[in-house]
Image (cartoon, rainbow, N blue to C red; front, side, top):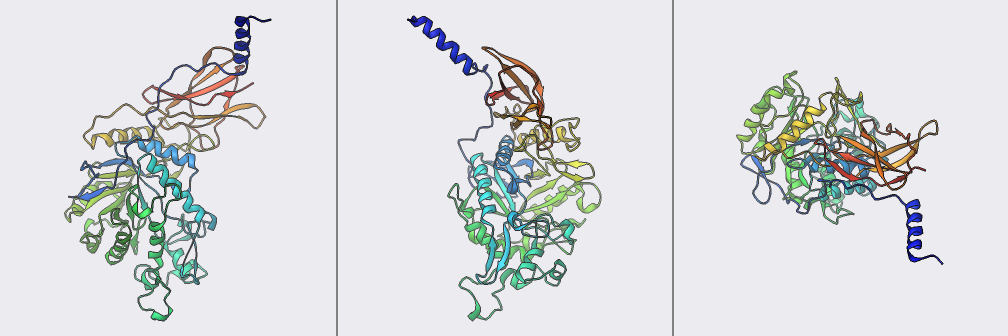
Amino acid sequence: MLSIVALALVLSTLASASSPPPLPLTGRTTLDPPVLKTGFIEAKNSALYSEDGKPYTFATLNSPHLLTSDPFEVEDTMRTLRAFGRAVSRTYTQRVASVNIPASQAHITAWNSSSGDWVYNEAMFVKMDGVMSLARKYDVKLVLPMINQDYGSQDSNFAGNWADLIRMRYNLSSYEETKAFDWWSDEVMIDSYVHMPFAILNAEGVDSFKLIITHLLNRRNTITGVRYGSDPTFLALESGNEMNLNGTLPAPGAWTVEIAKHVKSLAPTILFMDGSLARNPVTEDSFALEALKSPYVDLFSYHYYRDSPAAYDYRRVNDDSAYVQSFGKTYITGEHGFYANATPGSMIWSLRPHAANGGFLTHGEGDGIFSYHAPGWSPPPQADFDPLEKDVMHITWDASFKLLGLPTPAFPVPNAPVLNITTDSTGAKGLVWQGAAWAEHYELWGASKLVWKKLDGRVLDTFDAGRLIYALNTKCQYVALRGVSAGGISGPWSNIVTVA
């Protein structure tokens, strides 16, 4: 009969043969969801304030991918944004079925003449519920532009726009036919019940664009149970993305005020932002006077990218801000390709997260301009990474705290990556992983028996989505990975993967 000591030794040997040894101690992430959440943001005295009266000035990035991304990519984005001094971002618009957007990927798919309402894609709104839920979890405030501008060509119809709404509402067969209708004043598109005989009204009346707003703000999130119009996750609802009249004037003030009134009737504690982009070099001609004087419009913005043409000149930001503030309104730099600290809020275009299938989402704007990734790398590790990325990300990180009068902290310690085994085109084993937010690089460790050892001290995942495969040349039985911050601090371990 085996002695107790011998039996224990046998059991210990069997255990060590069937399970990996404990991983070495490592750091904790600084990107866990905050316990305390911020309430509604208020605009007063040309500035932004949280409910406790503290300034809510921010420097951050747009996140145009959010409404269409995988849940992992959304959460990676929220972790990335969470680390800035004030966690704010701007999504892209609700999608409309169009030449480039199939109905399965659109929020609004058709007009139903029988019900007197739009046909909404519930699956896309459930996806939006997930975005709102994760933003709420990480206390990230969102700006949502509600509809996209018609840029005058189907080639630039990236997300569906108000011309597609006209086409659906009037049952038109082509984009060209929509040009006969004025989006800004057409009573069917805004308030079609105004001149309709009472007898043919449905019970609610027919507010073509307002119906979309009503559907959005009366929606109850299927995850959190919170009604959209009562959700402090929204920093602001924006009338649209880059709305303009005839290419060189802001959206008509009467239209903006009418939409603002409707939004405020459904969401009185959420800020409303005029989404005009006049493309006009004259400050006074870039903002509608009626909107500037309206108590229903809280925020104004403009987009800046270069010093030519003058309509986009970043050097005009101080003049634009001062003009808007002279009406007692708050000014936001909605999109820009540089950092400016003249406004209560600014958002660079644009951020992309880790991809669900490894590497990063990437996006090119042309002219050698690409989306940014945290914490930033220089020189660019791949062709689709911007050469200014590291500088832009580090400057924005620093500014997000300095604008609040706070010292800049150490760079965030990343969360745990998720590691998997895969095979390449030759059948050879490799590693792929869902990356950790703010990881500058990773350490790969392996173990065969009782001891872990470092296999590679600098592993990168700076690849286009789906192109990350790390060749596995080791006889170790187990491998694990951990992210390392830009400040050199190791984060929590990934899951342990059995290699052989």
